Image (tube, rainbow, N blue to C red; front, top):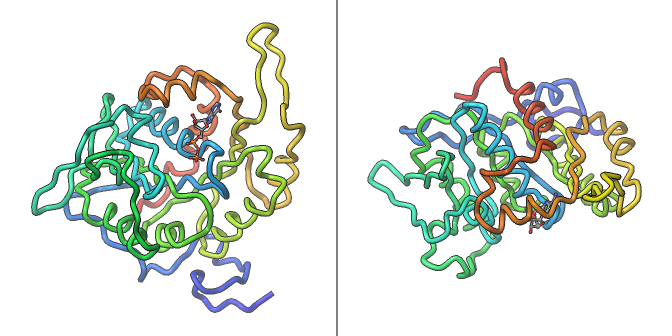
Length: 286
Ligand code: ADP
C-alpha cells in the first residue's frame, strides 16, 4: 500500500483521514450567489442501463414528498433522461445576468439538464470530454438553485471525465451506487467503488435494481438472473446494501409517460430513509 500524501484526490492510501470523507477543498467550485444547496448526493453506476436515472428520479420524488426542497442536476450530458421522466419535454431553461433558472416539475422539483437547453431533445451533444465536464460544473456554479435541501446528481455511467469533475468540484455528501445483478459479476462496479474511495467520497450504500420479479398472479419472487452475490460483495467492501428493487413494468411506464412523480411503489423508501439518515445532522456544505 502507498503512503498517505495527505491529499485524498491524488493518494490511494486507505488511511483514517479517508474514512472521514476528506477531499481537496481547493478544487470545489463555488455555488451561484443565488443558490443555497445544503446537501448533494451523487447517484452513480458502473455501466448504463441499470436504472441509475430511475433511482435518481424516485429518490427526488420521495424527498420532495417528505417536505424537503429537492433538485436534480442531470450530469448525464450526452444521455440525459431526467427531463423525460418528469414530463419536461419541450421546456426550455431561461436565465438572467444572475444565471440560469432551473425548470420546475409538477410537484416543484428543480431540474437542470442539457436537454432543457436544446430546441429538440433528439439532437446529440457532440462535444469533447473537457467541454462536457465544464458544462456540468456550470450547471452547479451558474444555476440559481435557490433553497435546496437535497440535490441529486445523476452521473453518467463509468469513471470518466464527468464523474471525476463532479467528485472534485461539487461538495458531495456522498454517493449511492446503483447496480443490476448482471453487472455485479464484472469488475465495473468495483471500479466505481474504488474511484469513490480514491477521491475520499463517502459511499452511502449500494442499490441492486432489477433484482427480482414478483409474479403478479401468485406474488412469488423470482430472481431471474440468479443470486448476484450483492450481500457478499458489499460486506467485503464494508458498504451497506440499501435496497434490492424489483423489475417493475409500472415504474418503467411512469418514466416513459413523464409522470414518475405519481409513483406508488414502496420499495424505494428504504433507500430514501438511508440517505436521509446518513445526511441529517451532518455538517452542511458551505
Ligand atoms: P441508467 O440511468 O442506468 O442508464 P435508466 O434509469 O435510464 O438507466 O433505466 C434504463 C431503462 O430501464 C429505462 O427504460 C427504465 O424505465 C427501465 N428500468 C429501470 N429500472 C427498472 C425497474 N426496476 N423495473 C423495470 N424497468 C426499469
